[in-house]
Length: 232
Image (cartoon, rainbow, N blue to C red; front, side, top):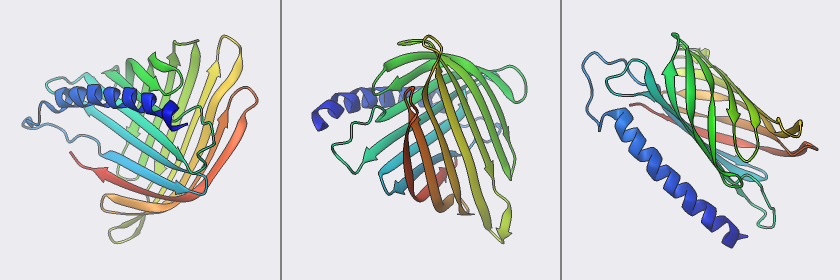
């Protein structure tokens, strides 16, 4: 199984190199602009569950010198404890250029790397609302290879104050992918997080429900999550 995964990891590393070059452009090679609004935090999360370890990173930033164009990346990876388990989705990384249509609405276009499907062109819309307590992301899109897939992503975070410098951290994250050619379910999940946050660090309980294929084969993963939000 490791021999099958290694080529996928090599392609994923290449995708990350391309991502790094795009981040350099987004950051303006590290040169900050005067009066520039601060970028969104860069959260990296590890979930240690009873069946697998799950990694997720979300990056969003505006391009230097542009009020309209930006960059968005969502990357995930799974490491199963059972080496005999033949997971279809080991690595995914979606990299999109965003163009602001309105204050909280953007058009998106780019590519998604999938460990089974390879590089997939993608386009869609993104609604993003964020304040000190709430984060709401609604992300409908279309994936064009190897067949037309309609995808919807929903993320909601709520962080009410618990004590001084300590907040409750809660998140509902959902995905649904529909095979438009065969008119069948392709992939979906429901991820739940509940814990506490202090400064840039969050931790607590995690529960993942993953569904695969037309028969919606279900996998569950219950454990703990650790998240750190890098400030830029």
